[in-house]
Length: 268
Image 1 (cartoon, rainbow, N blue to C red):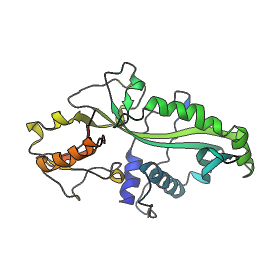
Image 2 (spheres, helix red, strand yellow):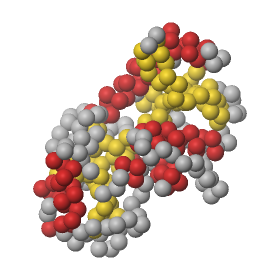
Image 3 (spheres, rainbow, N blue to C red):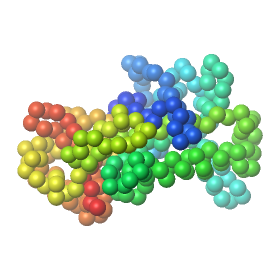
Image 4 (cartoon, rainbow, N blue to C red):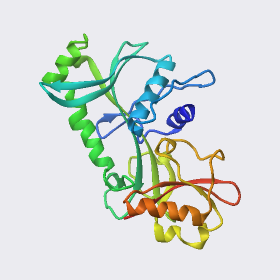
């Protein structure tokens, strides 16, 4: 599972390339994982923290960077103002790079006018636009605040010498039956599946397929045959239980030809 997560992370494209929104996208080094042996990751932490373990191990495995620090909380008296994800040192240029790591699953809502506002979380509790603004206006400036600069100075790092970048990877899901969705300057290679509502999922066109509800840790990996597939009737019952709790599950689908699809069934 851990190596599959690492492969899934590497295979997930960045949400944009180069610089957009005044944020430079981190260019992950090319890696061949034949000899890569990942260390275990705690199973009781949220997916975002799992991705931090994945990122750290992959960067350590690469020849491009050294990790100077990671997960450094910035505190002012008894209050935690935020956390620095990673500071890397380029082995060739010696440039220090502050990297904020984000891995997201977004559904595209075409009813929203502006393309970059269309990306929403499966449960509509977060949006790309808000997350992007937080990175630019809170997480990057944190390192130049009095508390941030002092925390870095204590580790012999000059906050003025840092270059800010973001490793922002995402899987995007467009509305079921949609052929083309405008997502503006974002990377269309991130489109991996679709989303639909329960009534649409209850239609006969899905009746002969097989289904699996991946755990949150499995969301990042590609669907595969090494799971317990269930019928449409069986999975409908499981999905309904989640929707009642206002939780939109990811679903893996295997059609009659053995082809896989990823989708979300939403409650809203």
